Amino acid sequence: VRVGILGGGQLGRMLALAGIPLGIGFDVLEPGPDAPAAALARHVVADYDDPEGLRRLAAACDVVTYEFENVPVDAARALARDVPVLPPPDALEAAQDRRTEKALFDRVGIPVHRYATVASAKELADALEHVGLPAILKTRRAGYDGKGQVVVRGVDDPAEVWGRVGGEPSIVESLVDFDRELSILGVRSGVGEIRFYPLIENHHRAGILRLSLAPAPAVTAALQAAAEAAAARVMEELGYVGVLAIELFQVGDRLLANEMAPRVHNSGHWTIEGAETSQFEQHVRAVAGLPLGSTAVRGYSAMLNLLGTTPDSTAVLSIPGVHLHVYGKAPRPGRKLGHVTVRADDPMDLRDRIALLERLIDRPG
Ligand SMILES: Nc1ncnc2c1ncn2[C@@H]1O[C@H](COP(=O)(O)OP(=O)(O)O)[C@@H](O)[C@H]1O
Ligand SMILES: [Mg+2]
Image 1 (tube, protein in one colour):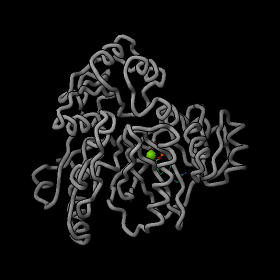
Image 2 (cartoon, protein in one colour):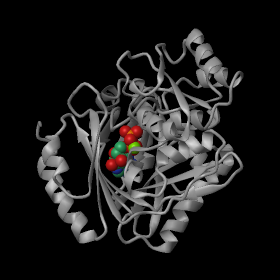
Image 3 (cartoon, protein in one colour):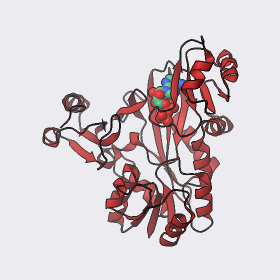
């Protein structure tokens, strides 16, 4: 079996790292010549919407998936005429635009915080009346890692705020005073079987994921069940196949959906060492038509992103229970260059190991 991947970043690289032992080969379509996944896959160097590149990918592969959601949906649909594309392009379309994403959550009955779509400074001023302050303005498309977002605390000059998202079609949401951020990761197979990992607790800095704890501490059975039910409704609605992540805000005992990712997710990287079957292997199994694996968890895990710099490997690997992943990307401020997963059988040991790691990370190695 050969799996094609639209996108050749670290997620594609970790998909290949998981699939190769299963006897699966990979082809990635990615315009950049030094793509992190290219070390492990055949590399079609082409733009995501290049018909010739897409044709070559379709001809080479039995199924095509994607590792980031800003692949043009038309390209995914064009591919789907020649080769199965999973998760279905409808999922890509829904996740690509914050408005269609919220509309999907509304349609399947998943609670979201107040929001309104805006296309001008005037609409922004009106929308802020409805949504209230403080609020957060986000471009509908192409945002990631907190890019294309502006927090609005006052409305002195809507035109100035509007200018800060470049006048792009946007949504404005109430800024949620959440207790914490969580994510739910599930996988649905080609025959409709669904499995979930336990809820994960996520800590962001300036809109970028910094630390994930898995399983999230102090999760009630009711909270886990609510998150699973929400994700299952999205997957059933879309006829989904593959791994799906939904980012959630916990407020008291309620969950509000923030956004979804129709792909493997940064908050699931810990599953490589912390679960019986990683999210990457599950995604490959699902899209390749293979049975799903167990999502059983091994002890307690934390994942720390390496943002902008990578630490000294010797120091990191001296800490017990640590696993280092470096993606082979050129350093740039704030860029995700790698991650560290640390595991322990006891939550107190985990806490100590995180503290040791935090002293090493963010310092150039
Ligand atoms: N409505 C909101 N209320 C409070 N915090 C928010 C809100 N929207 C986003 N954030 C914060 O910004 C982070 C990134 O926003 P998100 O919508 O997930 O966009 P991205 O596509 O950049 O991940 C969130 O994980 C959260 O920490
Ligand atoms: Mg997010």
